[in-house]
Length: 223
Image 1 (cartoon, rainbow, N blue to C red):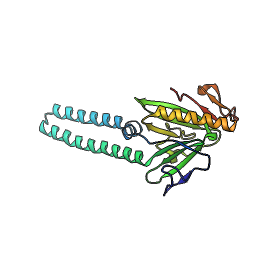
Image 2 (tube, helix red, strand yellow):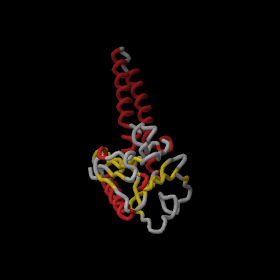
Image 3 (tube, rainbow, N blue to C red):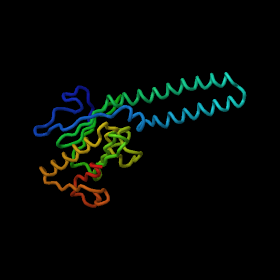
């Protein structure tokens, strides 16, 4: 990982070495990021339930206009909360750049403390496509062997709450299947150049820890 300030190539920590090619770049879709990563749907549902219960209880108590005024105030606060979620999503989406080269995956992440995370193909154990609806989805990576990155460094670009073995994730890509196909092709081409065996199939077919000679297992990228 490395800090980034002035980027000679947007989204990359520096000029690519000779022979390495940039194949794909993208960033999260902020609306999907707000819904799925920052749980905007859950926040909206909770606030709507809270306002509805408050209004019903107030009307049953005969508060009438006071109940309606209280519900209106609560709606304003709810809109402020949802606005904060949207601002967070927009900020993270704009600050993030995911890159796939012929040798690695690079994640430019972070708003207050931006970082570049380099993930060479030889350090990847698996990659899974997680659809989010429509063409939006996540590409979830698994690091091989003892390699790991602190969950807090990756958040929110980590899948789930696995703190011991965080999975770096390309979040809420608007055309996730295309990114997955590029990654699959890049890993296959890299493996052919390096003479490294790559297994393409279900994750259950191989345990990276039991077969350390297999540097990259790409799963479900055509799902």
